[in-house]
Image 1: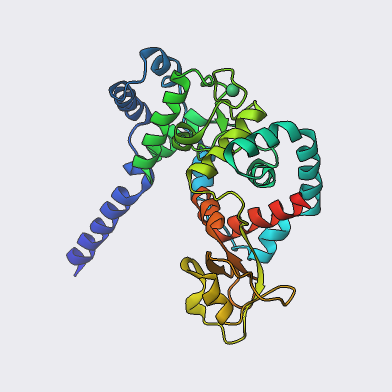
Image 2: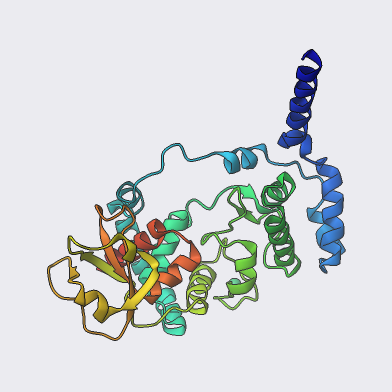
Length: 323
Ligand SMILES: [Ca+2]
């Protein structure tokens, strides 16, 4: 019996040792050396590797933020109040006036209305005011080494090094969030490489300090992800009391005429427009909360951030900015 308990205790101890992240974590400098080899194999120049993949200390703050679970999940109503507030609307309208020509040029070129570009800018970083002060290289190296999503963050780190290698930004100025989302529109490095554009024509894609580049990059992201010019994102609706929960969600797409036939009305009590469009019903707080009918462009906003809270708030803020 004693022996059995001892074996059990030993087993528990072994399990603790091998399941503890601290014990499982490889020495950072050993990991970094391997990362330098991976970067070289991916075609990153030796100069960029030398300048960026030495003398890094993993960020304990980034690890802490990555592990932090949200205490209580906000309701959509709470999120919306925080994100689409009067202060942000006033600031956004002022910025649209201030950067009207630049935004109009981007709108003309990409077919994305300026209020959506500015709404994303406002929600992501409070119009560039809160871009995150982390070194992107340190943040991504920490996340990749920490290991929870090693493959994803290793790819993002290689993408970040490619951006530095191409001369768009220096490693020292490449700032972003603890998870590596960069600049005024918080592109991950892979999104930067796929969608960032040089809006002011100086040869650099600078989403940190050049607003024309921020605007053009945001619009290009939306356009490349299926934005349809001239269509709205969606609108608030009233659902009939019999409405089935099974029909709620952005993945359930039906013709507008189908939703009309179920008795869905606009917030003002009118019928839905009679257009040949596919639409979904979202109710971020469930059927007891606000409901929205959403179209193709809402799905495009969800490609940016896969959250109905986020996409609905971007749409609502854009509508208010356009007023
Ligand atoms: Ca530029």
